Amino acid sequence: MRRALMALPAILCLAGAGAADSAASQVARGAYIVNGVAGCGDCHTPHGPKGPIPGKALAGTALFLEPVHPMPVWADHAPRIAGLPDGYTKAQLATLLRTGRKPNGSEPKPPMPQYRMNAQDAAAVAAYLASLKR
Image (cartoon, rainbow, N blue to C red; front, side, top):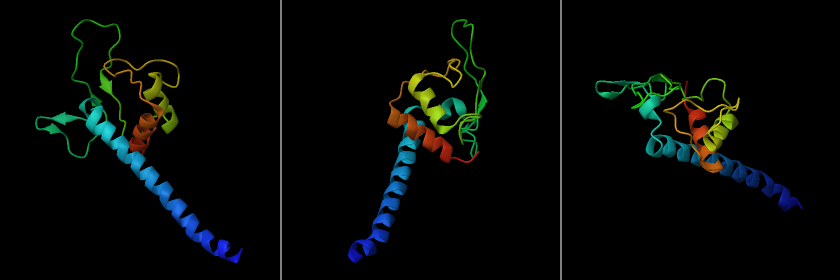
């Protein structure tokens, strides 16, 4: 019994390290999806003549895109997503990325894609965005 009690702090330390590694790997996976796959910065990062403006990654910006054909609904601004979009929790953002629906049930305006990410990828993206400074 005494041996088991003496090992308990080491076990708890390892469990805590595993959780930290898991959180860090989730954030890294989210960073890969946001920056390498989904291209979120293409719309959500302000660009200047030389490309993305340093220090403004995912800070939101006016959209330079216009629809090829007239559309009744079109966003003219991409919101800040660094630090999570205003009014969103990580769970709400993950739900949007899984279902294509905002917390109020509406859909984001085009050109925002209606993502249908799996639960792990959506949670990773939300974790990464939440880890960024606002």
